[in-house]
Image 1 (cartoon, helix red, strand yellow):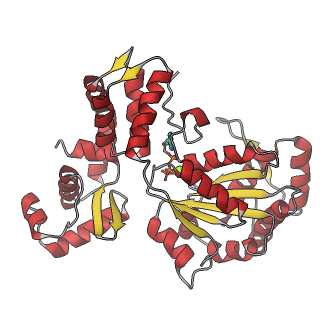
Image 2 (cartoon, rainbow, N blue to C red):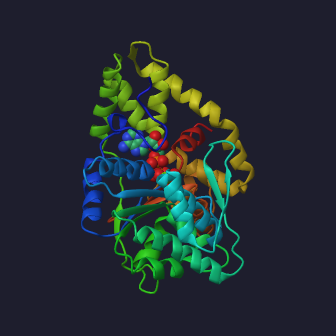
Length: 373
Ligand SMILES: Nc1ncnc2c1ncn2[C@@H]1O[C@H](COP(=O)(O)OP(=O)(O)OP(=O)(O)O)[C@@H](O)[C@H]1O
Ligand SMILES: [Mg+2]
């Protein structure tokens, strides 16, 4: 079996590190505090939430755990349906689901089966905003009266800012605030939006959760983990190969896992640098079409700017004369507009530290592909 998982819910034995982060999140849960988990995409927020849930379910006094992914929701109605589905998925037992539906009272959902996953899909007919308020409150009230403590993780939380129709932020805050039996983990990758929601004084969620930033996994810890996973499956990998993997994927969890998964799959006994190079090439080849598609969605200038950043790897002063001249990118004023648009499109990742911002191409594989152009 391949020990390098590519799905967020990774079994403990194949989950790399995050010991401190797990402890910290468990600490928030135990201290009754809501927490907001923030990191760039694909660092491992969802994986960590599941990992923390696994820890909590192994306890003697286990809380009830609900995971709600609102990535694909566009309005309050979608949110309510996805939330109800997540609750029903955990309740499982028919009699409990019946009592849940009874609790919802006048907002009876139509329940169908997802043809692919086989799971229950809920759809509500919510004609008025009063209906929406009623249903959202009913769902939260239901969790509030459960006999055991309830933890709800709402993943991709920034999505509520994109909702059309009613303001979800204010609504949710009003209903969440009085709850005593239900705690929340809010998770999201749009740092500005998340920070705005939880740290701006005039935002509904101001100071209603502790902010927690997830960093990359420590390089040495990741290196040891990769070696161990090979050895545990009676294979091995050279130090040189591991170093190359971590450099090439910049220790960015999803990309590191993907490359490791490939290298492991193509190794019979010992993985060496040449195997890593071949696996990396194969990955870039597979993504080529999607990368080319992105080009058609960008202006030639944006494209040129991306290539320049990719070739540099990391750029600290993207509007400096030195950088702009080196790649023929035009005047600083245009460059700063290009920069903003590429960050907004999540094609460039801005990392802030005490000594200023730096930029890199967000998707590591895309970056590695662009730098070869
Ligand atoms: N600690 C870990 N050990 C091993 N693999 C991990 C770990 N954390 C995450 N992963 C892997 O990396 C992938 C990306 O992680 P995950 O989906 O949790 O990131 P995310 O931050 O939620 O991303 P997004 O913002 O895109 O939702 C997962 O599919 C999983 O395979
Ligand atoms: Mg996620």
